[in-house]
Image 1: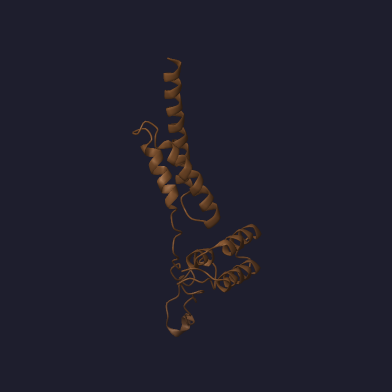
Image 2: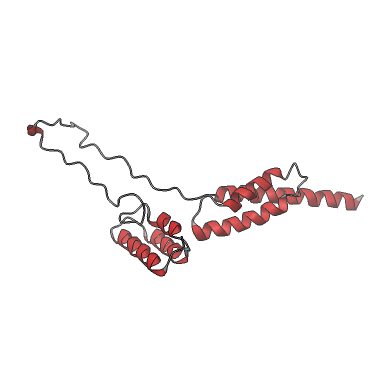
Length: 167
């Protein structure tokens, strides 16, 4: 679903509150606010504020620790360990970038296609890295691997052409 200006402003307010509470560093805050203002969908906004309290996610903002009565009221005492903590709140993982996966696949196929898929690997790798910087998706390592394999394939094809031209 596409995000509106009000959705972006709510996310920026949540991030501002998290920064004021010391949950985010200045660098992290500025990066997230920039990505929030540039985001196009509600899902992108949810990923930006999912790990801070009052974030627009599906998990409750703050879980309360269970309240245990005093030991003399008949409940067990957790000696040395304190009260047990609730399980961590799950949040949705960031999506993987499709262009990064495509770049890696084309790069891996380059040796089998005599380097022909090296060019698409390079193009998709650069496209994926730009999208990952803009949206914060996963897959930067895949894009870099696809770029490296793609450039190796391109160099292989150029060396073959050079060897043919020299003969």
